[in-house]
Length: 307
Image: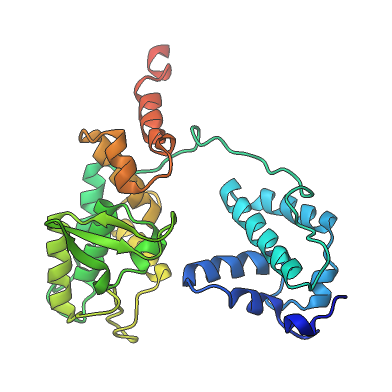
């Protein structure tokens, strides 16, 4: 073993906690922690545990992950593991990275063109919005107006779960006569913003007035932990419950609403380029998936069999 004192790592140091201390974004910390705990099977890993890991063991863990997780999730799992061992090498805590990309197995790929995109129809989206409006809307103890505004924002601004969860009052500003939301937790990096349509902005302002939200987290608990930032898990639970009240057969998620917004925009005549920019897709091929699925269903051979 290398001289660990130079790297301020001793035999009892919890390497996962020490590794995560490098990061600031809560979502990054959560995802890396989840993947490393999945890999090691424990939340506390010492240098002896790390030294015992072989490339053979890494490949077995990847194989197990492929049997249980979606390909994109497996890639995140592998990335977190590789970066963790790269960090240990950089700290001179271990000599070789057992998860080096040149040593580990190639992962199975999925075809994005064939992946099902689940989106609501416009009528279903309206039913979902209506299902959030339960009870007296101007009662600061009733979360209905908050919930309605969250769903409205997700549908129109095409936000990811982490992005809607991180929204603060200070992230909303006026730019060239338009309202925009700065995105500190954006997947594609910092310095991104998205336009907020006027009717959504009006709903946000009305919601802030009802709950007395002047600064800080935009979405807050109105219950036992009144004033605390609403977690992404709570937001997802709220959407699922509203989906059930709306009589929607499938479970609705934040990503369902992002897909729905993209689909409804295209159906209303938006160009691929417009949707790509608004959804912040890295490639137009991602946006094209919505067109491929629609065309596949509209021009299916199933309609010509006639038996």
